[in-house]
Image 1: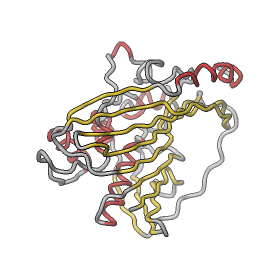
Image 2 (image 1 turned 30 degrees about the vertical axis):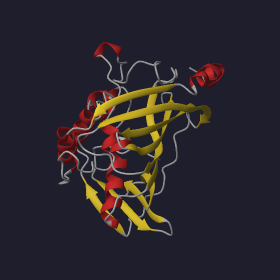
Image 3 (image 1 turned 90 degrees about the horizontal axis):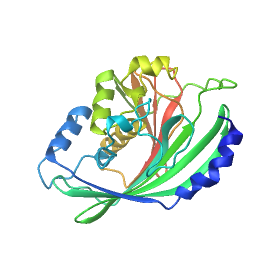
Length: 282
C-alpha cells in the first residue's frame, strides 16, 4: 500500500479517537511469582504486598482465540484499536505515572481510551501512530496512569537508514542476557502472540530480522527496575521511547546516569546504538 492510500483512510481511522475499553483481572500471588521468576526478583508475593514494578503490563491483556489472530500472531485489525492497514505493529514508547503500588491479591481494572491517531511519512513509507491512555485501579483507587504509543508501518522499503553511532556506556551499567527463554516467558506473561519474539524462522524469513526481537515493554521493565535499584525506591514517573530494535543475538547492557531531575537510562548491545532511552524521576 502507498502513503497516498493510507492518507485517504486517516480520517476514518481518527474516528476511533475517544473509543474506550474496560478490562479487569485479579493480580494473584501466582502471577507475581511467575513475574519474579522471569526477572530474577525476590520481592514478597503474599496477598497485600506491593506488586512488582510494571507487573501491570501483564494484566488485562486482550484474550483473542487463535482463529482471530493474524499471520504475525497479533489480533486481527479492528475492535478496540483502529484497523490500521499497515502490516507491522510495534510499541514505540510510552510514559507511566505511579500514584501508588498495586497490591497483590486485589482485582485490577484497566480503563483504556484511544486518545490520538496520526499519520506521518517515514524514511521507508507511511507511519501511523496510535496513542492509547490507560488507567490502572484497584479497590483503593487509581494506581498507575499510562500513555502507550503504538506505531504501524509497512514492509521496509526505500533508502536504508544510516548506521547510528554506538552508545556510550553509562556511569551505572548492568548486563543481561535476552535469550529465547526470557523472551518466551515474557510473551507468555503478557499473552503476547507476536511471533517476532519467539518464532525465529518467522522473524528472519518473513520480517527480515537477524534474530528474535526483544520486547519494548520488557526493556522498559528492566530499565524501570534498574532505576528503582539505583535509588532504592520506585520512581514516580518513567518515560521511554524505542529507537532501534534489540535482538537475542547479543547480550544487552542497561545503562544509567544521574541528571538534574533523576536518571537518564538506555539499553544497548555491545558497540551498538541506543535501543531504548528513558527518564525516571522521584
